[in-house]
Image 1 (cartoon, rainbow, N blue to C red):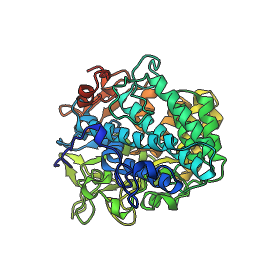
Image 2: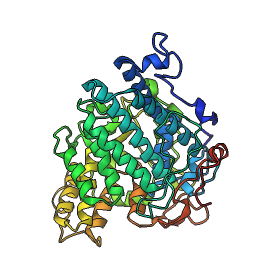
Image 3: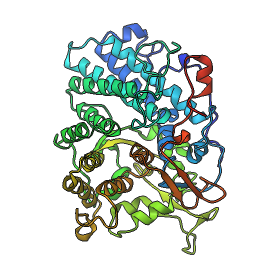
Image 4: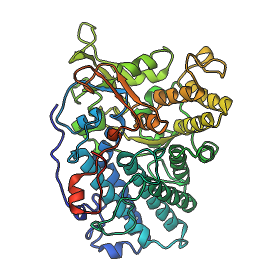
Length: 483
C-alpha cells in the first residue's frame, strides 16, 4: 500500500480553523472580533470547531491510533503509512500520525477557547448551549489526547505526565504537560459544566447534556470511579432519548446516517462531500466490489473465533469474507481476507461513514463493568445480556451468574462482551490496559513479522505514543515520554 498522503507540517500558530473558519473574515466580511459578538457568528464558529475534528488529520488518525493497537484486527503486510508504527508498537518521535493529530487537536481546542472566552454565561439559552458545546468539545479532545500520549489513569496518575491543558488562545505558550490526574480533573470539570449549560435537545451530530453525561460515564470508568460511572450511564439510559437497535436493525446500523440511528448518542457526521475515498477509515478495512479501498487490515483470527461462537449473532454481519471466483477464501500474504464494514457503505458509498463516538450500547457496558468491579454480579450480567439480546442471542446463548461459559469472573464476561460489541471502534486496548491486563496477539499478522505473536503488558513504555519531537523543539518545557 502507498502512503495515503504527504504530511504537510505547519507551525501550530498557523493551524487555526478551517471550513467555517474564524481566522480572518469568513462571513459577510466580518472580522473575528466582530463574528464573536453575536449569536449567529458564535454558532458559525462552533460549527467550525466541529468541522476541525471531522478533518482527516484528526478523525482518521484517531480511529486508527485507537483501534490498531488492539487485538481485533490484523495487518496483512508492511506499509509506509505510520499506522504500521501504531499497529506494531514501534512508536517514534517523528511519527506522522502522532504529529498530525496532536496539532489538529490543539487547533480545535484553540477554536473552542475563542468561543468560550467570547460567551458570557446566562445571556440566553442559545448562547449557553453554544458555550456548553464548546466546553464538551474541549473536554473530549483533551480526553483523546491524554489517552494517546499519557499513561493509563490506573498507573500513578498523580505523577505520570499527561498533556498540555489548553485554556487560552496562544498557540506557542511554552506550557508544560499537566499530570494525567490534572488532565482528567480538567476534563470532568468541563463536562459537568457543559451538561448544566446545554438544555437544547439536538441531533447526534452535536453535543447535548446527554452527550456530556455519556462521555462522563466513560471518563469515570477509566478512573475506576465506578459509582459515578454507573450514575452517569443511568442518566443517559433513563433519559428515554435513545433506544438500542433491534436484532434486525443491527446489520444496517453503520450504513445509516447517524441522525437516523436512535441508539447513537454522538457521532462525527460525514456527508457525501466528506467522503475521503481511498484515505477514509474504512478504506483500510474493505475493498468494494468496484475496487475502491485498500482492504489490507482484516478481522483477527482471535476476534473471528470469538464472534463465530454463536451463529445467530447479528454482529457477524460486520465481517465479510473475500472469496475468489471459485468460492475459495482469498488471502493476502497468507492471511484470510476478512473485511470489516463498520466504516463503510453509509448511503451505499463504500468509503463513507460517520464514526460513532458514543452510543447507548456502550452505556450499558460501562455500567456492567462498573457493576462487576463493585461485585454486583447480577446487575452486570443483566446489562451484558441486554447487549447480547440486541445482537439476536437468546436462551442458552445468554449468561447467568451460575454459567459464565468457561470464563473465570463476571468482569471477564463484561470485557469479552465489550470486545464483541465495540470492536473496531477504538476501545479494546484501553479496556485491557486500564484493567491491568496484557494485550496478547497470538494470531497471524505483521505485529511480529517473525512469529506473528506479540504480548504487550500494560506497563510497557510503548503503550503510549511519543510526543512529536518537532513540538518539543518549539517548546523546551514539553517533556518526552520514555523512549
